[in-house]
Length: 262
Image (cartoon, rainbow, N blue to C red; front, side, top):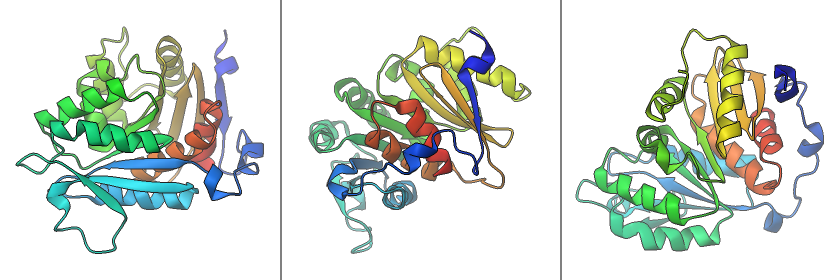
């Protein structure tokens, strides 16, 4: 297969799948349910931003789940949230697993949005959750770091999306022992080839940013979108991608690519 067969280029003005932009659910009841998970006693900006971005992206219904260490500090009426058990340091505790799985059963997709801190108990919780939950799972920011450091959590898991910075992608590749490394000096063509190879071999979808382009890779297909002046992008991109994906579960590549230009 030649590179042009799986490399698809779009711009903000010329989306690849413009028909998808005009065929969204008009009724909120059919627009999907997203569970946003994140936060620790150190902060909750990422889950709060993701919750808001999912609403802007057109999710039918959203819920947020935070560790109960935040219960007394979260401003009243700031966002609708449920609270799960936390560690003494304020991150999600292992015993939150049952409740987290129960919450996830309500949703069509789960977004692990970050601000989770670096905690061994939280790492165990997320690994267990990823193994037991079979629905659509998106990881970004420091939530994705848990998968970057232990790639086995997500590599062979279907229905999984990583929204990661390029340095995270480099580390992920090294820890996963991919035969070739992602390098900061690689050109677009080489990066497209590698993302094609990884997502052909594994059921994982990846969104990353490099050289002012956002790359979407899923099922061996890769799209690139030229993006200028978007230094803070992971949270809003992950939230929008999650929403479009849960609304189009049978067309992950098309949905994820469209979410970049929506």
